[in-house]
Image 1 (spheres, rainbow, N blue to C red):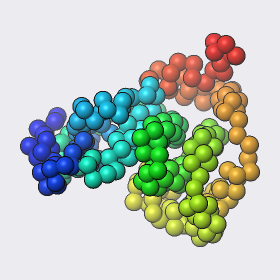
Image 2 (cartoon, rainbow, N blue to C red):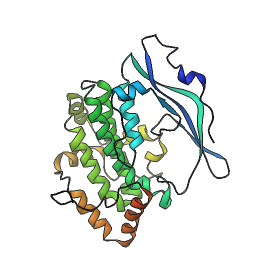
Image 3 (cartoon, rainbow, N blue to C red):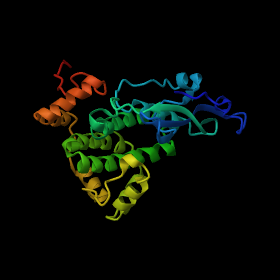
Length: 288
């Protein structure tokens, strides 16, 4: 069930100067259950539903989905938002509900009682953030917005890992390796004095401030009354001190697969399409 696009979506530059180009626009998504009752409304966000992108903008920046299976829309939209960081290129959100969808209990994000949230969601977030930041750096290497989002994603990674460690510890080691991947592949290579200043100011109470900030997002909240398993100051210290080996994730997957239950969950990832076939199988030196 889809509503029609409002006229102003196509003319979103009308309230700005004539030199401003609106390169992406979108409205709200309404999610309903099987009975038709509204469960939530999502504004802008990661989803591709209810959005329009200017073709010339997409082609100029060579924007394409990168082949990943989890949170690929997040990466695409993150790149668009970061590229539209100047007076000549903008995005715009309209208040209209443009898409109404019914929740599918068998979808990639809902199957196995929401396995995706604890399993591949963070993996996709990391891979697509790295991809988006690398793409944007080629065009906006000194963008302040880029630097802000690199730090923001580190905070999201920390909050997500804490949630996984508390709510689904069977995925905690996988999540930890992906957080380390982000830290070493993205955060450290783009390290700036502002990050160093932030790290020097971190105190034990900073952890509560971080969770309070992200508490408005339902999927990033810890259960009521539960404390984070690791303070942000401790998290940063472990990130700094632990070695990172990209091949370590295969050891983690091998250990996970030793459990019949976890092996079944990993197979389900392949069958529903959120992961490629044999994603957990270590490749040889020849790539086979």
